[in-house]
Length: 350
Image (cartoon, rainbow, N blue to C red):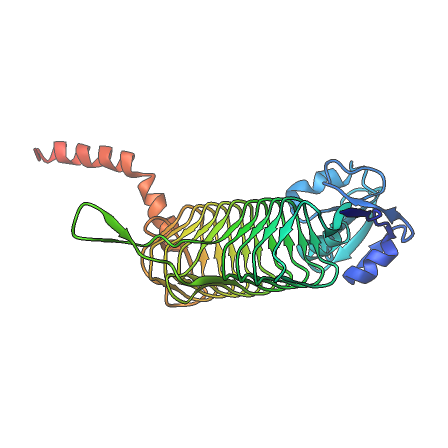
């Protein structure tokens, strides 16, 4: 197995301003070769100022350039070149992409991998050592499979995917194009299905479906997505799932939804498109969650949400503003009880 090295990218702020459609204030010929936090900086680095709380660092940073909002005006003199952009977060994402190329990539098929002769492998595919790919699989072009990955029978993986070490994709599952599966992700483990057999044991219900990941899906480390009992568990195009997330059998996650760490989605729950789900959220089974729903961290969702674009918090979850009002009252309960006790004492209520 061979390796090739990618050179660290360098470009001028003039080039970056064209990429980000921004307005330069300062030296357009400054060369940047790495991103940095604004409080750390460093010569040759480009940093970002979005949150006003970090403005003080702008006047002391050693960064060569800083991205700022288009309406930002510094209160004091600044040393770095400023690039004013419409949306600093979006510009930051595009800038970080310029630096995200891996320094070292494997190329070719490792001799220590085990690949069934029936597997179809596209051009420029990389397969790391101790990886196993079982029969009738398909691996699309430019896909990178790191060491110690297991890919079961009849698995299809699209082009330009990255599977990090320890990924397990079990039989019959389908992975789209441009997907990223981080270390130790498990796709297609059995759904949690059992039935009482009339005796003292629970009988396992065979899980005969699969998992389908559409294009541009990214799944964080140690997350698991169960195969369907029948049919498919579906993760739609553009979904981003954090580390340590559990998606149950026959569940569905709509396009461009984001799910933060330690969230659990029970079986047959369908989450809509463009939803934002905080960490440690729990979903009961067989629910339907409307498009554009926002759920705060540690909430418990026990009923379907049918109106799109709402925000929820609490366990069981209620509308976000209602939760804030309720919580403000909850914090006053100790003093309210004391007041009630004084009133009862005056009225001689036992």
